[in-house]
Length: 93
Image 1 (tube, rainbow, N blue to C red):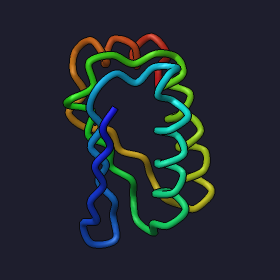
Image 2: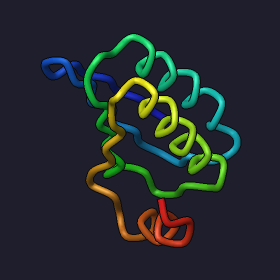
Image 3: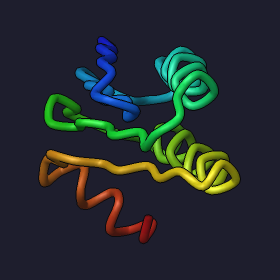
Image 4: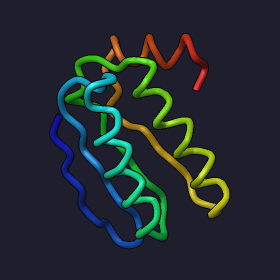
């Protein structure tokens, strides 16, 4: 799993690549939690290079949405591939 973070104004853009499954979930969650705590704008996550996402990956995003809402910020997902979108459609996130 590769995580690249870039600040764009007050927002944070994160590009994930690889498989987001249980073996990677803790590391990804830790990195994204740092981005949530240190940022002030919205968190934008580019999923273009994610080939697979498990329920552990979905759990990360659900937790982030809740935390960002407390801070009056938003989580925005972009460039979602069709296989990953199917998983999001099932969980209605």
